[in-house]
Amino acid sequence: MAAEAIGFKKHVEVTYQITDDTGEIVERIDIPVKYVHGNNSGLFPKVEMALEGCVAGDEIEVVLSQFEGFGPIDPNLSFTDDLNNVPEEFRAIGAEVEMQNDNGEAKKFIVSKIENGQLTVDGNHPLAGKSITFNLTVASVRDATDGELKHGVTQSFSAESGIPTSGQIH
Image (spheres, rainbow, N blue to C red):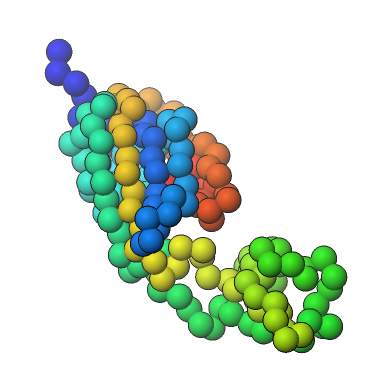
């Protein structure tokens, strides 16, 4: 019997590694991540297209430009303020600050720089402005169940590199 190939409405499990444009590993997942192919999978379109037709055991590499990945850096998402205006708990590089706009929409910002009495926060995704490379290994492929097709497949991802925790590989 021939191995099942990835296609529309297939339940797929992959492991992957993401490297940035300098070759630094920013995410490595060795426990298979699950998704339903072509069914609002949440994958970057180029990644999903590259997986099409693959079978268990296949290894592929997909390079995404900043425009295919997390987008260019938006300078409007970087703010600097006097350090004395910032609460003590946010006065550290890497500290996370959640802010709301006038519409009540929340956005997470990361403290990116502290110097000369000034603190800068950045709301861009950590991989914005960078090309990234996905190295994926297909662990398994099978028909998705009715429940998986209806409700999708949910799974946690590491948030350390800013990769989504919604259960989808973006």
